[in-house]
Image 1 (cartoon, rainbow, N blue to C red):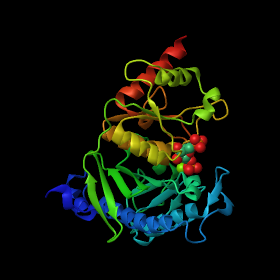
Image 2 (image 1 turned 180 degrees about the vertical axis):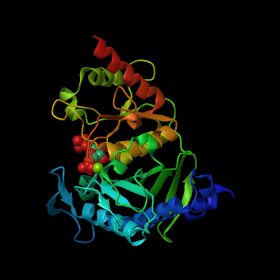
Image 3 (image 1 turned 45 degrees about the vertical axis):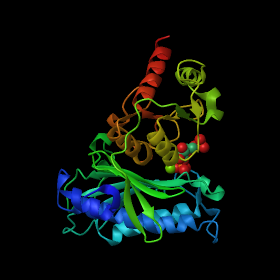
Image 4 (image 1 turned 135 degrees about the vertical axis):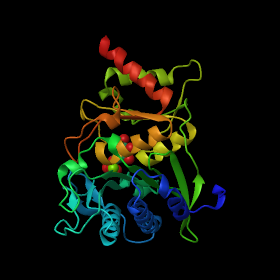
Length: 337
Ligand code: AHM
Ligand code: MG
């Protein structure tokens, strides 16, 4: 079938047989995410119209203000996955602890856990700038039919079965991988259907965009500072263009299409950076690698890190292969000197 008219629903069915362990469970799970995405998209889109703006009056586990839509998106994704009895556990940026689903039901044979950031970049909502949802899926490692345990969530990114994001932008897209390349689907809001619009997405090997919050420059390690100066140098195809939305999904999405690098480096204030390993960096890293890009903490591969905590932070560098490699060489050089 030509991809031109293929819907996400059709794509999932057609590609089910290529999954490693095919029982239809992963397909149903991605279908549920598709459904929740549409519901959240509807709310995000009317954010300016109704009284959903502003803080919900609560702070989450990292001490940040929760926006109302964060809470809404979190509830919607959890509700959809729980109601459809599709996973055995969920971890979310907005939940202090992981959630065990139907843990007392011995007949619960669900084997997948989902980790997610239900609404990333949510401080952008008030100013009508794109936000996103990020998700990561693993097979549990403890036996099915028993309550999930923390170790089911603390797996290396390398073990991910699927990962993706939804970008609520000028158009809404769902982009995901099951380990066989990356495909992007655009929502036709008139009929509520996602269509395959970006088959087999790939980072250009080289790029000319760098995305970093340069306001923190003074606090960055020397290797990062040197790399930023290199990006700004008048040489070869440089200076590069600086683009920073402050919404990881949007910055990543642009860089994947145009070629670029995203950085959230460690700083003297935040030695581990800001982004969360399990539901921000690992899924983006999986997508990046599946799209011929690269993701690193500045020296090592993100997906090789063995997590120790649910809400662990990690320095994050991600994008076009040659750009991430270049940055790593600057980090190595600065550590040697
Ligand atoms: P959030 O999960 O609280 O929304 O924070 C994550 C976001 C990313 O989307 C974005 O890239 C980054 O934080 C921006 O941080 P900063 O404002 O420090 O540059
Ligand atoms: Mg986030």
